[in-house]
Amino acid sequence: MRIENSFIPVTGVGAGTERKLWQSGITHWDEFDRAAVSDRKADNIEQFIEEGYDRLEAGDARHFDSIFPSGEQWRIYENFASDVCFFDIETTGLSHKNSVVTTVSFHQDGETTTLIRDDNLTVDALDDIFSEAKIIASFNGKRFDVPFLEGSFDIDIDHPHIDLMYTCKKLGLSGGLKQIEKDIGIDRDEPDITGRDAVRLWREHERGKDGSLDTLVKYNRADTVNLETLMQTVTSQLHKDVFEAGCNGN
Image (cartoon, rainbow, N blue to C red; front, top):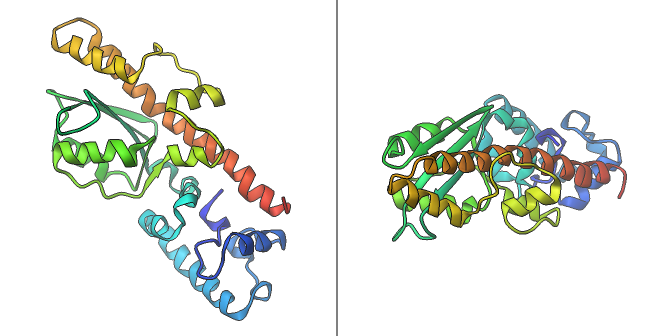
């Protein structure tokens, strides 16, 4: 589903009105007909479309992030897919006050980068990577990854953010990332390890055990790469459940 299929951000247009527009054949901004709604709503929709096209041409993801309801931010993904930076962190605990970030992996437009503590994990490196992204995407990153990074490195990660944990919940998918991957059939080539194993692997690396860091990095990178697959899977299903079903009156 693309942004141009959406009317729900318009003042006075809720999910019900949007579905009525779709069912009447107005499934794209280019198909809008003033006769389908009241004059006041028509004015609002036309203003929304005009500004929307300007913001799309400018590549302004932040604009759309600010106007879409929080539960509908997934609709932004298709328009900005190559500009979305998927990321995931590994830590030694749950609080930045008494734990540290060990690795951070980023996946954007087919490229994956991992930053490692005591090597290349620095404030400048984080700023450089985040600055290239128009949208960031995570799993539970709004509650965990972003606050942990901000507290650990004294940085401000102020980006449009699609947190796939909440997107998955719209489809009734709950539990952790690994469980949801299994539920929808996303396979992993890497060993079946957990967040607790990730802490153990880092401690082993600190003690000089060969291979521990490599295993941790592979695990972290797999998390990050799989986020893109998860995003594509859940947004495709939501497209069917929301847009296609709405067009058909379901």
